[in-house]
Length: 506
Ligand SMILES: [Zn+2]
Image 1 (cartoon, rainbow, N blue to C red):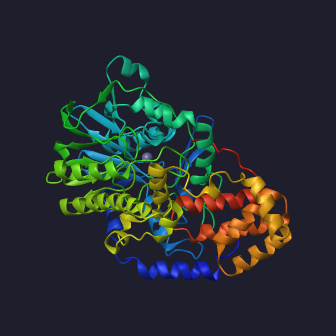
Image 2: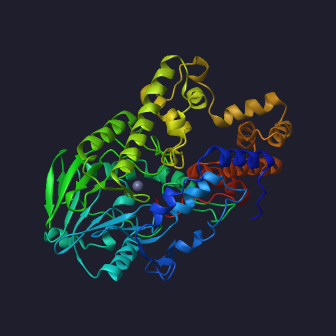
Image 3: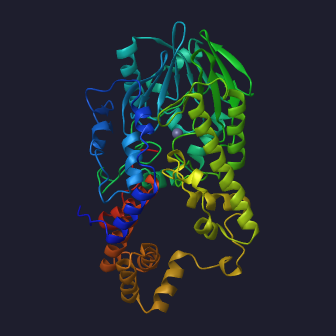
C-alpha cells in the first residue's frame, strides 16, 4: 500500500518533542537490557497448524533514530518494549519479555517454580517456559499466579498447565478475589464490540514498520494464538495475607478497582522483590481503555500506590510488573511509585476542580497541563493511556456522557447529522474542499471532523475517502500514544483497503 510522507507540520511537531523531552537519560535502556540471558533462535512462534502467532523479528526495524513518520517519544518506547528474551531480575527471579503484549515472570521455589501471568496465548506461554527451562533447567510448576482479571495475564495458562493437575492439587492457581467473575464480565459481556475495537487499538491488521504499527506502548501488540482459562483454586482476599508456596513466602496487597476490577500486588521477602501487577508500569496507563471498558478509579489507584510505598517501600530492592522492565534500587522504586501515584492523583483532582468550574470533558482535556515534574518523566508519558482520553474518562466516571448542554441532549445520530451538515455547507464536494484547506494548514483534527461527516453521507466518495485516509495517516504519524497511532492508521487502512473485520483475537 502506498503511504504518504509526513507533512511539515508533523516534522515540526517531532522536532519539538526532541527538544522538550530528556532523551539524554538512557537509564531505561540499561534497565531493559539488564540480566539478559538469551532469546529464541527461531524468531516466530507458531500454533499447531503452523500459523505464525508471534513474530519477534517483525520489530527489528526499530533501530537507530526515529524516522520522520514516527513520534520520537513513541519510537523510544517501542525500542524498549520490543526487547525480547529471558532476563534475570535477581538470582531466582526471571522474566520473559517481548513474547506477547505482557510479561511472564518466574519465581524459583525450593523444589520448582511459580509462574506469574502466563501471557495471552498457550503458544507464547509455552515458548516462554521453554526458553526459561533451556537456561535454568526443567523445574516443576508448583503454582500459577494471575495478578488480575485481564486476558493478557491468564490466557496462556493452558500452554503450561493441565487442568487435571490443578484438580489433583499438585498445582495451585492463585488469583485475587473476584477474578473469575470479572475476567468473564470484562471479556464476554461486551466482548464482540471490544474485540473489534481492540483490533484498531493494537493495530492487528497493520503492517509493521515506520509507516505502520510500531507498538502499543504497553507492549508491542497482542499474540494471536489460543487463549484459555483455569479457574483459581485459591483466592486472595485481604491485604496483609501471607502464603508460603513451596518454601517461598508471599505477602499480598489487594488493589481492586484500579487498572482491573480484581487486581493485587505482592512482596516476596526471599528476593526482596515487589510485584506491582499492572499498576505502576513505564507508561501512563488507561483510565478508560480505547477498546472500551468500565471507567477505572484513579482516586483509589493513587491510594493503593501510597499504601504500597508504606508497606513495602523500605524493604523492596527490585520492583517488577507484568509489562515492561523492572526497576532496581529503593530510591528508584520510590521515585517510580510516587510519580505514578501523583500522576493519577493529579489527573483525578484537577479534573474534578475543573468540572466543578463548569468545564466539560473535552474542554478539560485541552486545558489541563501536568506539572513539569510529572510531565517530563518517561514513565508518565502517554504511550497507552493519555492525559487527553484519561481526563475525559474521569469526567465520564463522575458526570456521564452528557455535558449538560441542552442542544447535546437529543441531537441526530451521526448519519442524519452528517446529511444535514453536508447540505448546510453546500454539498460533499464543498466539504472536501474545506477539508483540503484544513489539511494543507496542518489542522488535521478539523479535516477529520469534516471528512467524518462526508463519509457518513457517502463512504464511496473517492476524494472524501482518499483525503480522510491521508488525514488520519498524518494524525497517526504525529501521535506519541501507540494506541492512538494504531487507531488513526487502522482507520486510514480501512478507508483505503476496506473493512478488516475483527482480527483474531482479543
Ligand atoms: Zn496487561
